[in-house]
Image (cartoon, rainbow, N blue to C red; front, side):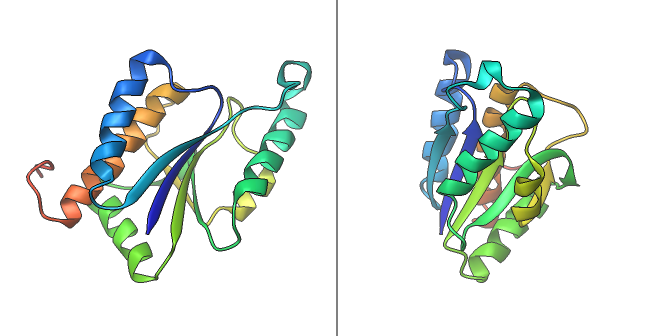
Length: 157
């Protein structure tokens, strides 16, 4: 199974890049894992919030396969403990899902078409975090879930 982390926005900022690359590399021992940065539309600054979300949704949907299992990160989603996330990933593997896409939407969230397409909506917290920090938390939590699945020492519960 392949794990892809998609984020709408600009490339990783320096203060986040090393951590994201480290945890993504570690996750690669368990699953093929990579980041896809979905660049915002060229005319993003000229668009209102609604139109921007529509354009971002088009860009995301063009890259998704119909068989992809889309996990949308959204503050209104279901919260999971680290062991629950591990179980969630294992269940997708058991279902022979070929690719899980974890999606971090744009600055204003996502268009309803993405919400409807999502197979699962996950909230990291009731708190709101900067997008760059969400990238790091996502990468670390997926790595943690992998170590839980292999009963390794990283996670202490």
